[in-house]
Length: 437
Image 1 (cartoon, helix red, strand yellow):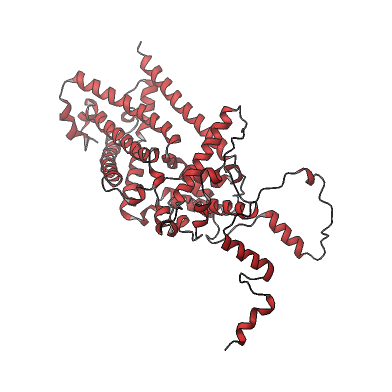
Image 2: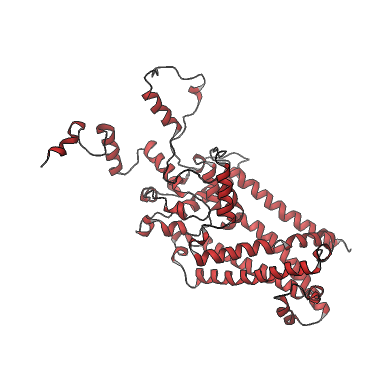
């Protein structure tokens, strides 16, 4: 009978971690639906970007109030959960505060004391975040795409953090062994009197808080997959695999580049037969109309989006009343990717055409053509997401596959094709302006 709690703990731990691993496997599968990208270059710069942006939170503090509070929550939540290691060991082997047996009492007390201070700081920051969302109602949290689940998700995660931090402090406050040490109970010593001095009652409260704390962490872990807070994990690979090219540099389509090279090569034979087997290959699509046409980095971007709205709040098109919201572009991409993943799951690992696609069913032409390609959204994103790359690929599809560009753009491209310039003047008349008085 004495081993039942240990076995129950082990079972909960295995189920929690197993379900999380299953969802992560599904996430990786979905990302790999995109086109592979060579990211073997600039490894030093990539590691520096990850350390500076993801770990160092360098872009968060561009908005100091939110940035500093985010760092407090980030550091506090991660460091406090180091104690989870102690909880796991205690749960599996039936020990109690194994850290006291491994570390000197003063060192253990210092660590738990630091954790308690961080817990209070996290609680304070979470309260401010909740007020910003629900009382002050900052404009970037009130956009059309932030209705329903996205809004609730932001609040749910705040409630999670409050509950976990409170359980941590209650667990310490009602642990008489820990309180009698006189070390580390910097905050919990003031909470302890709330629960009285009955040993049996304190033991029940302490054990209840202990179990709820670890179960809560496992629930939180598995909630991440369904939440925007997946960025807690994906910010690191996303910043590593992020673009290291200048922000104004556009990529060229390999097929188009090869055609241009062929046109400019005087020794090339335009009537030469295609390489053996090339006739059987399906021509590559120009641009992207669905998530499978995007690359793996763009799909990783979609899953990493924090829905913070910094990109949209900096977008000049959005600020002038246009329909475009870079945040919505990323949210729509993720929603469509999840839909495709569920389709694959429901059809034995194969995608069955559902007569839907990202372009049109999720993202409209109006949104795409509102973009000024200024890169403000890319510059603002705190985790190196690039909404502009998806917009450009979808506009490329509209132009090169469907000839569906706006009239003004079609006129310009026709002039370039016919006259070698954007203006509707014959090449012979280009310099006439020089003779005007």
